[in-house]
Length: 410
Image (cartoon, rainbow, N blue to C red):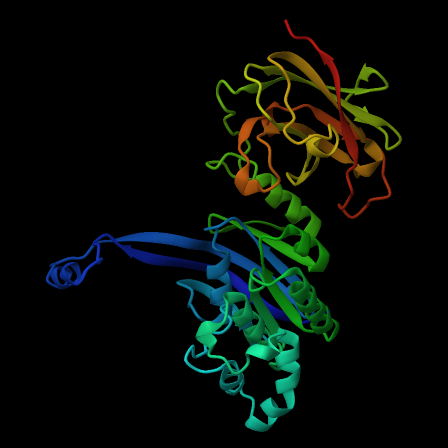
């Protein structure tokens, strides 16, 4: 049994937001003499519990404002929880706001030694590490310039190159690599792999689901200050992606969400077939065919996605038309149409599933697309995979294709 390095037990955290504005010296002065100042209580985290074991690369994901960064700052000891308990077993180094100890009026060289001292290194230690630090950061030509003349990316590279030298058991990382170029990010992730190979523990907050699936052993999804799920990187990444396509007022925990009213493209019916006949039960050797009837009242560019939801409530990946109908800016004329999606049943584990369909505006980033129409758990067909597949641990790779089968325009 591996030791538990981080234990979080029922923690909650709130902040007070003052109602009085203090945008000027006058407002601040007037507020001093108010008999009673009023606040609004903002609950950021609510009854959050989880453990992280020794050597785990543990991901934390969630949409902006979900409470991720607050949780990381609680782990780092920057904040204290209102309730609950956090236990840290080992030396912890946070890569949350790299370069906090930097002085913009000093040169890069001087800041290396200053930051090293803050991490507990001696002058002799820093002399020995200096060349490696500068080479990793790739800013040799700028080390004698003042830090205030560095770009944000240069500052992060230098700070990261210093921070990874720290002798630590646990690393906390909060999107610190967002400003680095692709080559530098690859170098950083190689460092993470090396650290993990040494048995170190990494807690990684990110919006990058590719990084979660490539590097993490487990992941946690947080939403509205509460844990939605803890599971394999694949499961959490898929759940996060689906949450980003749901209505902004909805929740991945919701069972019933309202569909858009009078959409430009409306899902009218979903027929699930096998071998040309309607079916609800599939063997792993079968092909699942979904015929989706849609009504186009306004010809707009769209993408359509077929997805599966397991009986446990875990949202699975979908087949997106962008990759199969093959065209960005895909449009259909006004009228009734049927689109067909084909999926090999053997890619799913033995279980019961809801089959959902979503129609979205064009785009690849969840932040840039809108829902046109989407079914939810309560109004989708149900199917059963009746026998076991080669995928027994809940992970799978879903392949399929979309076809335009007929135009029933009237």
